[in-house]
Amino acid sequence: MTGLLDPDGTLPEPAEDLAAQLAAIADPASTKSTMFLAAGSPEPARLPSGVGTARRQEGMLISGDPARLREFAAAGRLTDADMARWLDYPESKGAALAAGGIPRVLEAVGRQGRVVQQHLASPGSIPAATRAALAMVPGGRVRLRTPQAAVAARLAGLLGD
Image (cartoon, rainbow, N blue to C red; front, side, top):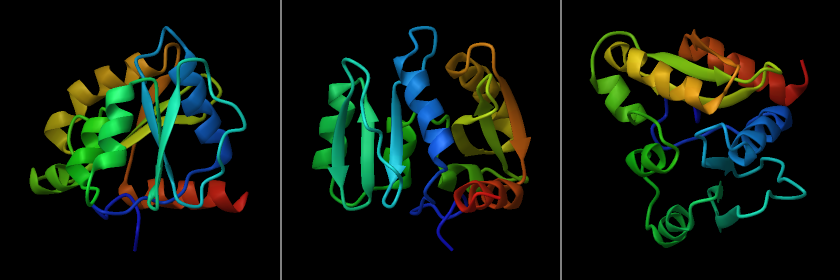
């Protein structure tokens, strides 16, 4: 199944989470610079000043970093490692799974309770990943979930439950 544990797949995200991600990119107090919209995700009607897009069949990258947009557009097959680098994840899904231990999904949650950043984290990366995630959601928080709970929550958000 495509999703958080599939190194090559991404489920679409709820529109409210995507709006929170875009707001974080526009917020000068946030370190978030880039987001990915999986194919089938709702696209924003407007982008903040200085933010652009690059499109591929897999989805769209939105970023204030033109170099990331060029790399995304020019890449051959998208890899998990590429996506982790472009989205500022501390490790790729594959690396988190290979690190040993039971990985968790780390979510940076904004003040309104919406997910601004979400990625798979190995046990050893959680402290550094938490610090990085908190910098993306000033005034927000970080939560850890099992991969199953994160996928279920994303699906529930997509289905309106």
